[in-house]
Length: 83
Image (cartoon, rainbow, N blue to C red; front, top):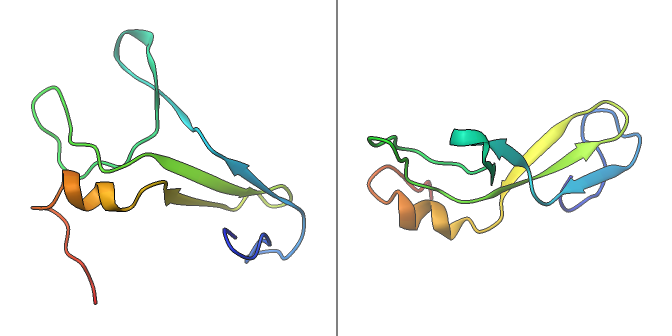
């Protein structure tokens, strides 16, 4: 979807890009949705901010990291790279 701009499931409709996905945080704060791999006391380690591509017909959604290198930098002890 990211490259083709077409839905791989239904091959119909347009694809919407969602740059900032809100997530409710503590004390009614709104944060960007992030991928983190390890939960620590009170705070988790961030792995990067997510964005999404959504099909307007069937609702199929793909998530992507805005900066994939942040995943490794923030969670180097938890990430295994496949060659």
